[in-house]
Image (cartoon, rainbow, N blue to C red; front, side):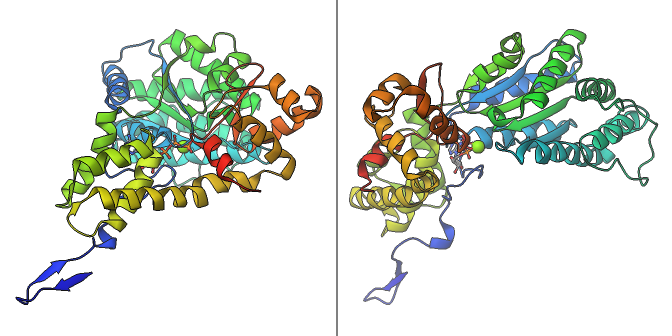
Length: 405
Ligand SMILES: Nc1ncnc2c1ncn2[C@@H]1O[C@H](COP(=O)(O)OP(=O)(O)OP(=O)(O)O)[C@@H](O)[C@H]1O
Ligand SMILES: [Mg+2]
C-alpha cells in the first residue's frame, strides 16, 4: 500500500481499499446521489402541500429498467416524509405463489411499525383516537396479530374482512389524524409490477377515493416500465391517479459527478480522459457507474487516476458485472429459456416482437407463452407493450453475445 522513498518519506501506492466509496448494490445509498433533483423536488412539493393541507394531489410512480436507481429514490422519499412526521409504510411486492400472503403480512407489520415510530410526533395523540384501532383491526385480516395492549387506542373500524372496504376505512381514519398533524400517509411500494391483483385493485380504489375526498394519502411506487400498463388493466382510471416518472440514464454531467464527487472528497483526482473512458463504458446507468467506480478505486495506483487505470478498471468492472449482475439472471433461466433469451438478443437491447421470436425459434406462438411468462416472473424480461418483450437489464443483449453456453 505504501512505498518507501529514498529520502525515507512514504508515498501512498494504490488507494486504501477500506476507503473505497463505491459499493454497487440493490437500493444501496450511493456516495453521491446525482441527477434526480426533479424527482426530489416533486416529492418535496408533495410534502409541502400536505403541510399546507392542500388536497387532491396524485401519488408518484417511478418506472425504469433494473439498476437505474428507483429503490434509492424511494428510500430518499421515505426519509423525507418521515422527517416531516408522515406515516410511512414501505414494502416490496413479490411475484410467485408465496408472494401475496407474505406481502400482506409485510404490509400489516410495516403499518404497525410505522405507526409506532410516530410516538414522539404531533400525530400520535390524534392516531390514538382515530387510526390505530383500524390499523390493529386490518392487521388481523392481513394475517397478523393486531396491535398489542401496550398501546392505548380507541377501537377502530376496518374489521369487515373485506379487503377493499377495510383498506379504505383504515386509510380514511389514519389520513384524518395525519391531516390534523399537517402531515401525510405514504404507502411506498417497490417492485409494484409484482403486486397481487386483489391488493393492487384495492389500493388503486383507495387512492382514487383519497384523491376525491382530499385525504393526504399517497401511493409512491417503483417498478419496471410495464407497471403503468399493469395498473391500467386493474383500474381504468389508474393513469389519472399518479404522476409517472421514467427513471432512466443519468445525463453525462450527472454521471460524471457520480464519480468525481466521491473521488474528490477523498482527495483524489480523475484525469479528463480517464473520466471519459469510464463514462463511456457505464453508458449513464447508475449501477454500472458504481461498479466501474469501485474497480477504478481498486486499480488506481496514485491519487491522480490516469487513463491507464481507467482502461483496466473498465475491463475488471465488466468482468465483475458479467460474473454478478448479468450471470445472476442468466443462471436463473433454464436451457429452453436461454434459447428464448438468445433469440431476443438478436435485437440487441430490444424490444423484440414475440412474432419474430416464434419465427427464429421455429416454434408456434402458443408454445412459447409459458416460457415468456416464466421469464417475466423471474424478472429477466418484461412486456413494454402488447406483443413485445424486452430485457429488464440494460446491456443484457450484449452480455448474451459474450456467452458460450
Ligand atoms: N442517482 C444516483 N446517482 C448515483 N448512483 C445511484 C443513483 N441512483 C442509484 N444509484 C446506484 O445504482 C445502484 C442501483 O440502484 P437501485 O437499487 O436503486 O436501482 P433500481 O432501479 O431499484 O434497480 P432494481 O430494478 O434492480 O431494483 C446502486 O448501487 C445505487 O447506489
Ligand atoms: Mg430496486
